[in-house]
Length: 118
Image (tube, rainbow, N blue to C red; front, side, top):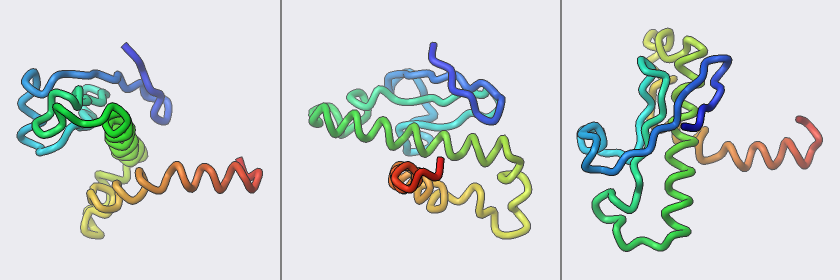
């Protein structure tokens, strides 16, 4: 089982088929961050309804995007921001904010790398 370090807290990376975990249907998502168990639970995307015949490259890209999104959730949680942002409409748990960070993260990293800012 792969483990990811999130600010000193190990998170296990768990992959399940869609039918193995009712949370995929409940959340309407192919992944979720379980902060109580320190785990990222990812759906094997080819088992997610509508993805059965998808191009393997699209599947790989989707799985990476989902994992980046859940990692952002974990960083915000481990920073205490998810619990403390409610006074400002819970910005740290806002899905659009988390998506923006997850989607733009690789581009930001590339820019930092090109600028020798790492």
